[in-house]
Image (cartoon, rainbow, N blue to C red):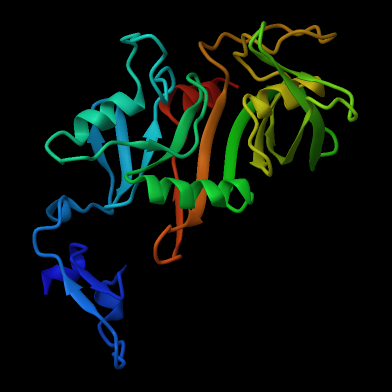
Amino acid sequence: ATAPERGKVFLNDVEVGLPDASRRLREGDVVRVWMDRPGSSKRRSGPFELGQLQILFEDDLLLVVNKPAGLLCVPLPHGDPTPSVYALLEDHFRGHRHRRPFVVHRIDRDTSGLVLFAKTARAQEALKDQFRRREPERVYLAIVYGHPAPPAGTWRDVLVWDKDSLIQRATHPDDPRGKEAVAHYRVVETFAATSLIEVRLHTGKRNQIRIQARLRGHTLVGEQRYTYGPDEIRPIEFSRQALHAYRLAFQHPVDGRGLRFEAPLPEDLAELLARL
């Protein structure tokens, strides 16, 4: 009875579980039971702690983690020892032969929230295909200066990555280096000089929300990079950009079932909102 629960049963090379128990078999179907499948005794669908990480979901193909602010997604080059999600997951996989994390997407070091990793190259490519087709739902919460108007809408820009300054810049639509950046926003709550907004990414460019908000005069509270421009604001003390990857939804790379995850605001952002 525990084999389907632990990912050990396959029908025509597709993993099946208890919900498939009533499925009728047809002539030619192949059923396999992999009793000693690596990791099958440690399948988790609920959250657990791994060092600085909270792992919200893990099966034999993917992991969804809730990353704290200040932790890199992937290691810095040249053997830099700065901690990263990737390194923590490598430690998590110790003892599993030929297993290592595969990056599907990233968020900035000082952004908190949901990040997706794969456990096989094949699963990584299938998940990345979904992101290339812009199918996953990626929703962020941000605290910005000012009150965006209208209170809901779409941001459209053409951005180019400045390799010297390591920032995004807006560029002319005809710039051959330019990449389209599109996000949908809505104001969740307003305060005296700031707003809590929800941003749903359509594209996923590096630093996209930070630069697109800044281009409209709504710098993120705590922002250190995208602060140029005409706005005269009285900075609110906060140690990082006030940005959190709140919701992530996508399809499982094998059976296609919908997976949806939410990560509540971390303590520092909740305290900031209480102050505001």
